[in-house]
Length: 114
Ligand code: 5GP
Image (cartoon, rainbow, N blue to C red; front, side, top):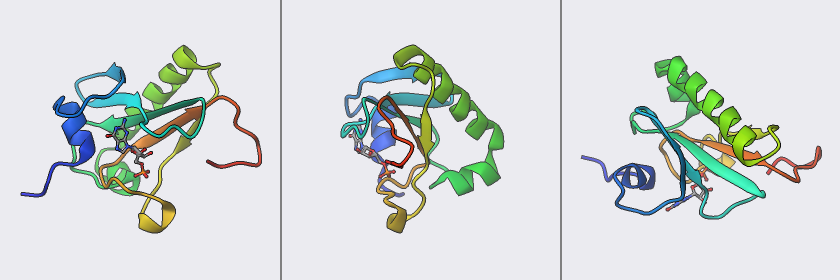
């Protein structure tokens, strides 16, 4: 069996995290190395999907649930507007191969993407 991803270990409470939202299917927690005043990761609990492309093909309803969670988190923890980032593949900066969305908010310029 493959090693559990760091996100599976957070779901299992083996690694501590500042959890901001949890449902039966997803968990959201503050990124350990924030790139914006608000930087939360929204993660499906299942490790079945390596990235957003697999997730969109395999379970589009779960992806939609993640987008709704991102909006709820941005409303609660920031002014409501947010940026959703899915790094997909190593060359795009993906380091954890367990699908996840970066929810960024606060002080985001039009000319920055990170
Ligand atoms: P990726 O680079 O794969 O798109 O995003 C992985 C993200 O997970 C990074 O932004 C990184 O800071 C975050 N991360 C990695 N390990 C941990 C951890 O143990 N706890 C938390 N809260 N975030 C983590």
